Image (cartoon, rainbow, N blue to C red; front, side, top):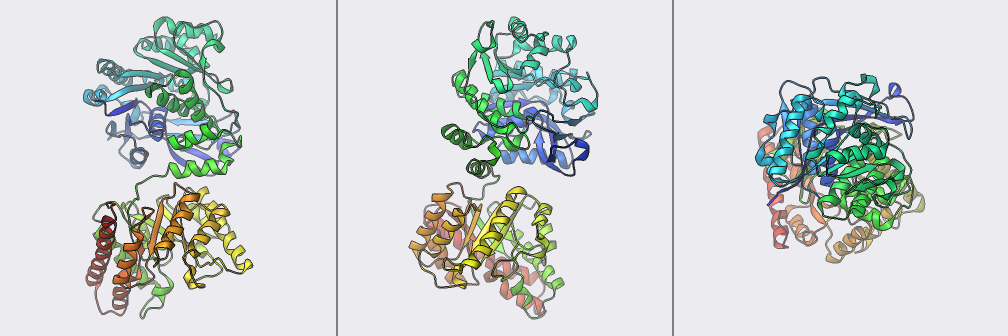
Length: 635
């Protein structure tokens, strides 16, 4: 049995994408960081479409190399074939979007890690796991990497796997032009043509643009070039023709390109052509490996290519399988796909990273409550929050499903120390106790402070609101939450919306549900909800229904504690755990309040405070896990 659908092999890099659009690369003021390189993009793109994908490449033994490895793993790509090179740096690419046809880019690939890929990096048993191996043209440009690719191809064919080539022609990566010519897609070269043609017989599928087939076939007449490729290879040839669509040829090449097999195209606005080919290839591989007809495979490919050309970045633009199916069933509603709110919500929600199906969150983001304690100073509160983090990490013990809520004003050092710990990290933005809602000054009047946040931090906002709020209060709070929501998306940050109506007015079984529906009505789609511990099963049913009817892809709900005693929390956990949408809890004062008061007064030391919080946090985790287990769900 094959355990992998596809292994891609070759380039891997970090793409530093200019955030500004419509200017020169010289004038870019900031960059977004993504994984890049055609094989890397295709591995992630096919994983998003549900294939079991893997990548063979090399990365440096540094931060960028670790980023590629970690990001691929988060995308669901098997990274056993990603080797760490102890001597070379990970490749970088700087890219910009000048307009719909110009895309300046610079490859930083001098003696880079992936160009040191060698035959020893190719494990026969790993190759044997795959149904298909996909190579790209750049790694045929150097004798060492060519040997590695050829070994992988021969092993693939011996193990019964199919093979594919994305010609992926970059003239300057073949040494045909200078560093400043990264945008160039075609320079004729008899030497490159000869090198490519010496390998074409090894493939079952060959994919390229018209210009790429020109280099593979040695002619700038596309039909003649395809016929030259056909003369040395029996592969299915797929020729990408930009706005004219793509054509597949399974046999002899006809006189007209239009006589090949085609799939439906999509009339969309072209925003960014970079990475479109890798998105196209991901969709094509999905159809090919699923055994679909070529028109269907080309439909998938064209759809994935359409997503890519309509969004910023390469891999981040590619769709999930659910998103692609949604798009194919619904059709084009807005030609600028990135401006289609419904489609973008599906894209965002179905491509989030991480499994947070269980949430045991220690919340010590409290500011006002700690500041009111005897002996409290900002410095002491900050030091105590470091103890809270130590308690959280002690209970977590490196396991998944644990998290913290910590602020960036009094708890800054704890917040920074939590980075990379494996904990889910939520960070509040509301000014404590504010109503109408105001945000912490660090967020800034334009909410630009969020641009400084690490991507692993989740924006948490608490809104004291009620369905019967005066119209002016409602309007002011909704405007703040709306602006915050869009700032979160713009900065690629998840958002947790906490609502507490009981502090504002009387609550009924439908109070929270009415608030939830109102937020969705105005276009707010939080990744997380944080809700009060309802005492009624009906209240939970109504709240969960309000969420799932509007956002079936929501991360889930966490239950807040409101300083309730442990026995009362146990009752609320038992009720909440009956609902799969409730992922866990986010509780604070029940865990830390007593230890904080005693520690701030100097009655106990660090170790005793940590031990007391560990005991309470661990106890709540056990209560939640037990409640969940009793309702038929495992932790």
